Amino acid sequence: MARVIAVCNQKGGVGKSTTAINVSAYLALAGLKTLLIDLDAQGNATTACGIKRDSLEHTIYDVLLQEATAQETIRRTEIDGLWVLPSSLDLAGAEPYLAQVENRESIIRGILEPLQESYDCIIFDCPPSLGVITINALSCADSTIIPVQCEYFALEGLNSLMQAMGMIQQNLNPSLRICGIVLTMTDFRANLTREVAKEVRNFFKDQVFSTAVPRNIRLAEAPSFGKPICLYDPNSSGALAYQLLTQEVIQKEGLQNHDEASGARPSRPYQNIT
Image (cartoon, rainbow, N blue to C red; front, top):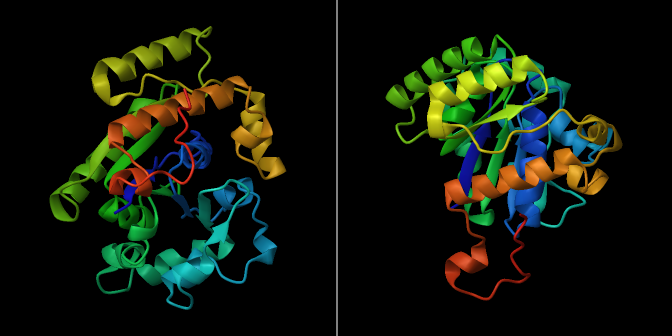
């Protein structure tokens, strides 16, 4: 069964989609069949993987409304082993509908069930809110990756998210855990970055990834070209950071590809991305 990881933070602009996109890409490059599910109406994960939204017949919105199946909506990407369940602006209208549906916290769980045996890892790019869609994702996720920008309001947002996760663990998903907190858009020449990073690490200890993602213009440019950083500029500092971060995710989650798990010879060599 696929490991299901939700990349979430209710605060926008913290590198959430960037993290979901690039961790998914490097998981695929490491030989893991990976499905990236774009749950953000902005659709950044969709377009950053080279999928043109105006060419889509169906999106996750149609799947949530049971007007299409996930299997017919999933799209291949330029990276072998990476697929995307795309999003569109229509998804912004799904929250009011989902809020009225019976067992609304389990809708995405039902969508995942027929998919889990086909992938090694499923990544959610959650919207920047703690609404019905994010709660759905957390209700069926094994773990979360939480991107945190190094600014003074970082801990305030984290506290709200931790409280929400505690309620979900208590009422909906007792096995939900934190894969890790990743510091994003860092510049350790700045006092603010050093102070916030120290505070986050002191408070959350080993729940914080060793790898921090730097501010990097190439990371910011890559989505406009419809490419993850591994295709746009694999030698950039942002690419190196996401390679190392993905290796940490693989180790923490104990991820294996299908062939390794079954004891069969892998169809292509497993890449050591460090």
